Image (cartoon, rainbow, N blue to C red; front, side, top):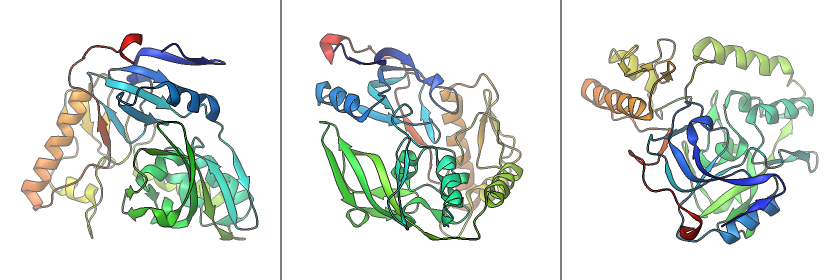
Length: 304
């Protein structure tokens, strides 16, 4: 494959450490950052159906192993990041739009509840893919419909009813990825930028912002809080290599600067096993882990 659309180029052997919030991860065999849906469609049309495919936005909630990723990675950050008001209650937002920008625009339009999106450190596409939430609200609470694309490049429009939505999970339309979503919101005359700032201050007071992390590592078990279980097990400050469980929020693992993905994954395992032994509760990772433990062969043009 020798694909180029405008300045959207296909990179080979691209280090994923530059594309994840933990700043770790080995090389992706193929790395593509399209600047339009059309260039994305062209790329998908040319990609072999046998090539594994992964999607990444801001790279939060993602751990890429040190051996890198076999197959192709599509980064959505250069896709159009528009927000359009369809009518008095519906807003369409592109998948590459950062959640915080969406929150601010909804406040300007006096629509809600959408302020909680300011607490999600990722893009709308990533929030849709995992039903991300913050401050008691979740992404799919207000989704009316979504536009998707499959790996052959075909676009579809689907209603929210076609998906099974759960806590930090979404099932439906396998092998399709989100391009945009339409949210149904209501008038919220009380909404203000002060609300956004207040929630961001609350987040900053309780979470280690500015550090290399992925956000919350584990899902909250029913009726419990993962951070509380981790703290009760005495794991704040626990380390593996240069990875450490945050003293500020126990459900955050920090890369202090030179941690490897193996360090982080080892610490995730230590926390999970220790909490299970201490409390009898097995924590489920919220972070998505992909890639190989050791570097494999990089795909060449003849293998794509």
